[in-house]
Length: 147
Image (cartoon, one colour):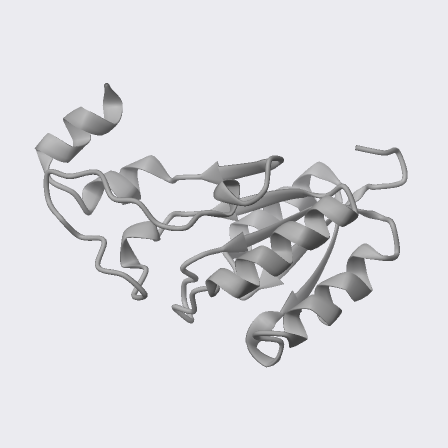
C-alpha cells in the first residue's frame, strides 16, 4: 500500500470490536451504513471514500450480523472493481458464512462453497472466526476442514 493510505473503511453495520481494535492501535477509520446504498448506489458511495486516496482497506461482514444482509454478486463485483481501481485491500469477515440465505449452505459433513470476493479479486483476506464457524457444523466437517 502507499504511505498516504492510512485509513480503514468500514461498510456498516459491522462488528464493533473491529473499530475498537483500531482505536486501541491508534489507527484511523471511516464508516458508512450500507442500508441506503444497496445495488448500483453502492458504487458511488464507496467511490466517494476511495477517491480521496487515504483508504488502505475496506472491511465488511457478509452475511452481516445484526442486519443479516448479504451482498449480491453484483455488489461484490462493485467492491472488487473499486478495490482494484484504487489499490485497496478488502477484508471480508465471514464469521456467519453458513448463514448466507441466498443459497442453502448447511450440509453436514460436506464443505460448502459460495461466491466469495476472493473469487473476483486477488488482494483480499477472508476472516473466518473458526470457533463460531465450526460450531455450526458436525465433527466430520471439522475433520475435513482442519486437514
